[in-house]
Image (cartoon, rainbow, N blue to C red; front, top):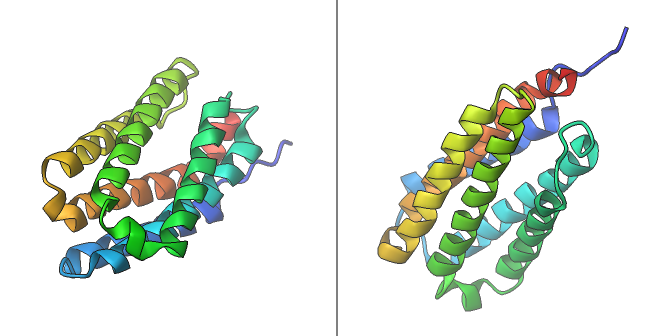
Amino acid sequence: MNAIKKHDAGLIVAGILLIVCAFLFLLAPGVTLVTLTAIAGAAFLVSGIFDVITYVRFREAMSLSGWALAYAVLDIVIGLMFLVHPIAFAAVIPWVIGFFFAVFGVVEIVGSLRIRKEGVPMWGWMLFSGIVSVLCGLAFFVAPAVLSVFLAVFILMRGVSLVMYGWNAGKAMAI
């Protein structure tokens, strides 16, 4: 009998941490940009690390492309830059984050269409999450003053996605 783990605890924990982070942004929108930059840096770093782990574990089973790994590494690099130089990045964070959220959304949309062809059941959520990510990214360019709200929406979507992917990891591996 082939033993497949039903859930991926690492993805679930990372998702829960991102959800908590999103609610902190919503509860304290007056937090300084420097603090938001540091928190966003930590979120990018955590997300990137877990994305690299997911890529390494599932790249063959889910036919993940090298672009997924490149994006994960980019998340790690951005996270480190934000954590090392939060004051320097505070002034440009709405545009930097907006650009990367839009790119992430496009990658997620393309990925959802790809896994749909393979019969993976979570493709619809991934498509929805990608569309919301693109819209949040574009919103940063239009209204950078409400950074914490858009950041909270994106991080909440990413956290829920990680929880859902972690919860359904066994289903994806069974296909």
